[in-house]
Amino acid sequence: MIQDIAPHRLRNAFSADRAPSAEHWLLSYRGNAVLSAAGGLRLPKVADYSAQALHYAFSLDGVPVWLTNDALPETEGWRYIESKIYRAMTPQEIAFACTVGESLHRWHCANRYCGACRTELRDSKRERALVCPTCGAVRYPRINPAVIVAVTDGDRLLLTKYADRPFSRFALVAGFCEAGESAEDTVRREVWEEVGLRVKNLLYYKSQPWAVADDLLLGFYCEVDGETTPTLRDGELKLAQWFARESIPNDYSEISLTGEMIDRFRREKTVDK
Image (tube, rainbow, N blue to C red; front, top):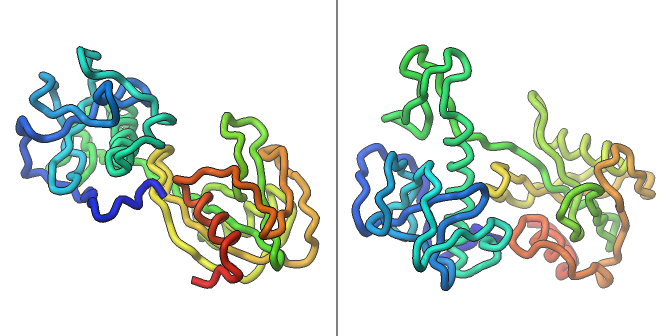
């Protein structure tokens, strides 16, 4: 998955004690595109640009990385690379850093002013948050919990395709948690709403910080319970089809939790953790 960057380490703990220096790295976005070296995926340093109002993002291998809200200009040797392209580029640790930075960039840009009193928000000195100096309202980064569900029937796996999204590869049943709903109940509800099946024996697999869309993905395997014929119910999918383990198509994302779960089922006789 995209966050599997060992032995490299991204540390995203908040720090209010750091100050930018010339050798630190800099993240700048134009929409969903990140500023990178023209010859490959490499971040500029703070010394390369006269950026203002920098926000500490995280450190990568001990080097602080700073975020600017401004879309810095493309100059000789530097260009913007769209998210769908840089996510598949190497070095992978830089690609992952760019996705996390993009999520923080969206948060800053969407929360410039207080929604209660319209005062301009400021960076908190205590935590990763934006604070209103007038009414005290606090805005934290947006993180959307969602489930990825591998529905199995013996040696068969249910694969899906979305109906109206640019992503056209095979996927698993997925959906967002509702307020007051456990992740397990989300699994049961989403499978029923999308493909009309009941499930049992839920097994949590692992999570993925899918910063591409501000999501935290929670992966589950489960078994179909009773009727096995999928029925497309809510219009979100255009296909839901069972595939035998040996016939699962090799047409899914390789950087996502979805892809890892499909690949794990295809290779292993059991999905027990």
